Length: 418
Image (spheres, one colour):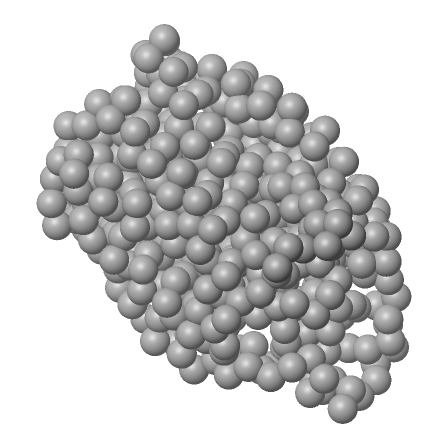
């Protein structure tokens, strides 16, 4: 049975809108957040950093991310969701470009902080926009569109996996600055499609129109705890895995191949698999499954050396790490009323950011000890294992059963919802 022309016409814009919105995570996470791992070995060598200093740089980024996530709903109300989303990308692009113009540690730390803040606003507001692209009641379709948005992270990882190694090949360890500059240019090119897509989201849905109600987040407590642990576990790996492979003797294009495979696996699995899987799972089963797969993905590079182990790790880890934000966004959409999606996703992202701030710093300090980088990465395994157990505590109930205790601030009068 074929789809009617009107249904096909409706689905095509939803697909294109989600794809355009995906330009946000391309810049916000693919470039601003994760490409640092590719640049880290060259920056450490050229700038004489310790692993703790390198981890501290990412902690600065994560602190900015915390503030950005905490204020994302405010920016969305203040500027409107569309402008907040687009301006977040603009500022991220400027921070990327500026990172290639200085080798001053303090200056780079500030730029990582600014990039983290703008990244969080882009990602949180964009997640809310993506969750509203489909206004119907088809949970599986909404989850698939959110998955399409999240696939932008993998696309960004692939692009940075080509651009950064090319810069390092051309200019050696000094090419780290060119890497930042090139990503700044690509980020600027992403602004156009992102702005177009944001304009296509209906004003009321995108902006979160005023709505009477404050909503309890208490039922999502296990997911908050899970997100802290998951954030700390996965980002420690993403920060230091390239340095680990480099220490094992892998050359620039070897690590580039690893990064590209990871990005392709992320984009493909997020787009084709996780949206559908998460749309069918209930409660904390999806987050627990994500943690388990990501944990398995960390193990190959810790247990074995060589390209085979690296590729296996890239495929398994890459296929699942961005399914975490997808699972959280879908769960928030199910358990919170529409007017609270941006605030709920923002507060969940704050929890995620706390984990991302602490994880690299602790992992970096452990990596500076006698055990080396591998010792620091075993922290990821432990945190991911605990997070999987915690996630299973989560139970799901619909937005219609929300009450007013522990409210999400929506800027509207408080009412009890039954």
